[in-house]
Length: 367
Image (cartoon, rainbow, N blue to C red; front, side):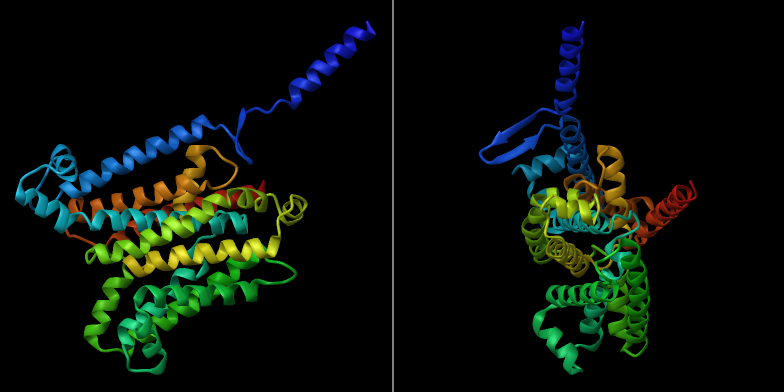
């Protein structure tokens, strides 16, 4: 009887130690198979490609999805190739890349802070990039500060503004480490101050510069060209690729500081590096299309619910960010009676989602 019980117990123990998901190795890299996660990403990617084709085809000279795909593959008439390749195509890739950069940036900041309300636009990082860009647009070379920014160009100016803002927020939030709630409170305060400084710049500037800056501040893809595609593409491929590689570190950071240290994560160094990556992605996206609000907040949370992971998934957040920006651009151009900047539509859609997250957080706290 004892032998049978011991065999049963050992069999149950062996069964419990077997991982729920089968793993595989590629050289020294050990991975786990997640077919559901891969399936969701593929479905989201297919939906994104379909939405891009619809967005390209809509306009004064409408084209069906089949015609758009035919032109992209090298077919179509001369007029169709001119409309698709020269007039309409740069807009959609810019929207996709901007959304991907914002989605990855939001996923990283929410993982570091372990708070679903953390995103570059709420923490003030987007406002810092916007303040530097508005100073370049409004002041031009009229001051020493703007003259330095003018030599760098709009993308680098926005990047420097975002990095400087993130450094200030990180330093003010530091108290024997960085806590998520403290980081958000400091970020909200810095965001308010930067928003006030942007308002001061707009009030004191020339009316022509103000109109240009105001259009940019609403987040718009109207002026998108191939020159705006390449910087965002470089940021998504290089910086976004590094965040995907750092998925294990992000997963460890979600478990808390002590657990992350026990897993061998160099906490402060990794937090600073990942925060710098999130700042770079948000700043480059802001420089390309202006501050497109709430995409970085909503995309990781929607992806988390679709993929059913413990924390915001990087790849799914990127694809969903592209879906939100391109879908909002399609709504702004074709469904509404007057064409609006894409940032207005994303803010109108993201505001209720923020309220939902706030209500959900309050219910968790009260429970």
